[in-house]
Length: 69
Image 1 (tube, rainbow, N blue to C red):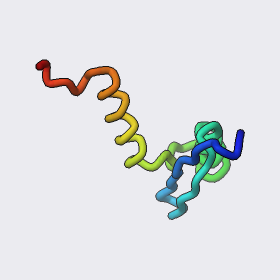
Image 2: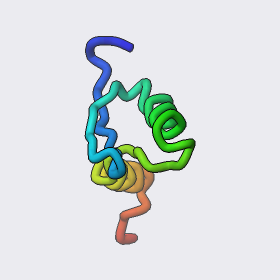
Image 3: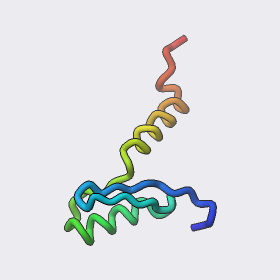
Image 4: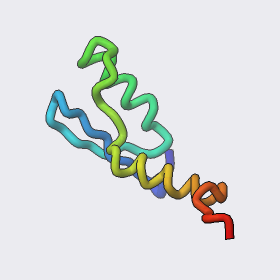
């Protein structure tokens, strides 16, 4: 991890918490929280607004949102 590693918001509705973790550790942080706090149940997650925006950017980059013109 570097100082310029962007951070991603992680939310846990059960704990009513939000935290930011470096992008390079997101998967491990979410998995670790869910395993340690929620017996492995997938409750904590990347903020859905971030995943929606990322999906839009990827779809646009792949040309999936082109209207065919």
